[in-house]
Length: 120
Picture (tube, one colour):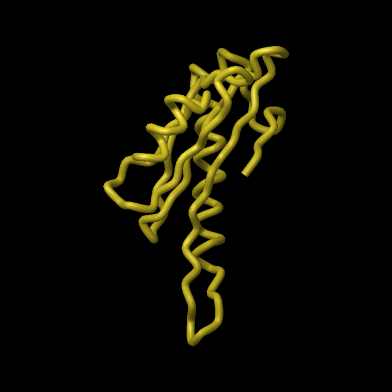
């Protein structure tokens, strides 16, 4: 919350973060002079970590971009990273991105799965 207040205030950034009551959480931020927010959403993974996903419009060109900030869990199984959980989380994130791009508000703005750039 402190970082959000600092970035949103005097630093010239806008954005949002996952308000889950945890000290370490995930958010997505952008420069207000360059982008405007069309839609921000959040996803929570089975690990209770998650991602912030935003559809942004570039102020100069009007083009849309979808950006995501992701906090994946890295569980260990006998000391070795176990990737099954990360793969499941990324699949859930992909579904959320597609849902966000298909949302009527974003579709009306021109967002389309497969044609709107996605940056993780």
